View (tube, rainbow, N blue to C red):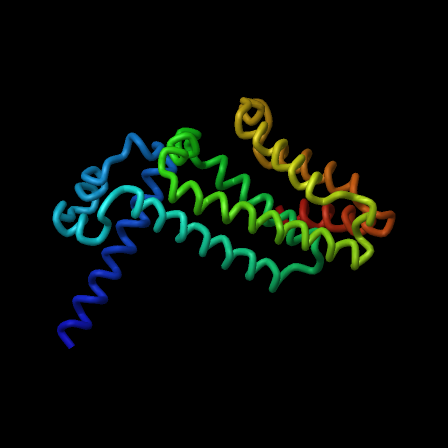
Length: 211
């Protein structure tokens, strides 16, 4: 019984470390935050900390895994409550760009210095592309999207646009939501069928009412 309590305590401690690390890495970048910094913030001894995570890359991999699990749960919840693929795509894209918007740019620059963690992130991004393209194809089956579109190209283009959004000061002049909507709604109108355009306009009206 005593061993069980220790195991639970260590699991909870690991969760606290990962949560704090995600917070600090995304706010300040990876390089500027040390393992000792995180241990001190949590009031954990260095010895205990390093027993759980041997080095920063191991901690970083766990942080990425946690964020990926949260993303998967979000997609599941959206699938369970959305009426069509348009709503799924819009909500997922919005969550993605909000995450990027809240992340210090140095995080992505620093991540490249950790090969295992970077490879883990890259594998997930490749997987996400396949899932997104399948959503588009489902939209074709629903008669919402045109069937003459290369969705790999379109997905790449919208990602590039969102990356530009991340690296400009346009959001200092206009609200983040307004810029995001301008990109996404224009993009989706361009690949929609006549039926899809009507569905999109109806969705946009309801979306703005709720917002």
